[in-house]
Image (cartoon, rainbow, N blue to C red; front, side, top):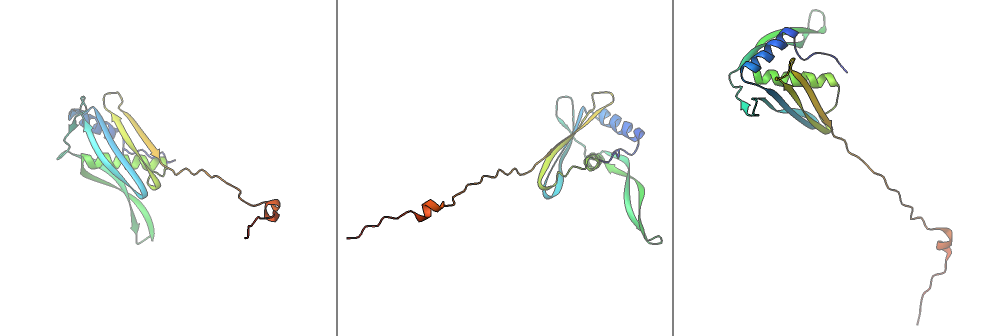
Length: 162
């Protein structure tokens, strides 16, 4: 399991949590599901104290993330930091993706899985919990032996003729 923090820094995490609280948020809920060979973030919501969604449209925040790139001079793949202003919804999705990646759970292949990232903004510090259900097919094997015994094979058969 990777221990990579999904937040670029403690300060950025604190600023984001403060912004979400200022917007009236009490809880963040990000749900996800997957199967086959793909996974999706289904919904990212900021909820007020009564559980009503708060509109995130137009809300943006500066976020730092890492991306890989190919350095042609070295002939190697490298990582670099990118700082960009992103919609809050995209940031919540990215935090969830990075948190899921850090678990090494395979919630998106084969029978898939589902779950939710929850951030309780009413606690200090905000509590961040990830619930993941990984689905798997259960097989029960039952064996039956219908082999005829030698006695049954050599037993006389009755036939009637008129």
